[in-house]
Image (tube, rainbow, N blue to C red; front, side, top):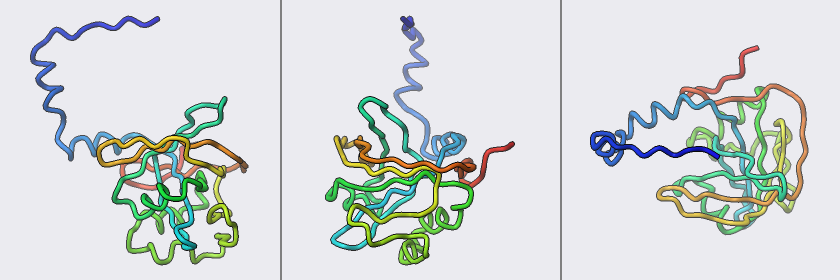
Length: 176
């Protein structure tokens, strides 16, 4: 069992109350290397999707994943309504797809490549990636500017390959 030590400095408590400015916090968070995941769903028959760096495994038993989505994200409301979606962890071979989803101007072209299967009633399917999941919302938690989704894993498939990583606002890969 860990020991929790109280902070006795009034100066430390004052600094915590103010918090960092937005630019400093964003700069610090850019140093957190993250895998990239495409999350896709249907929105009244139209494919919707976004790229996320927040996907994490929550538990194996029961099988649950967790991710967060900004309220302003184009697929946010569709994810709330549908409650069923696919998630694909991207590989270095999927860089073009990641760039298309990361750029709002590329939104009309997101599902135009031959790498998409748009005939699946569960969710739009990307044929690339290292792992794919069929997910169903179990819980949604409002958290300021984001919604946290806790999703039940219904189905999973995997492939081998190097992961695509986001670090310091750049798509990259792991060093050998």
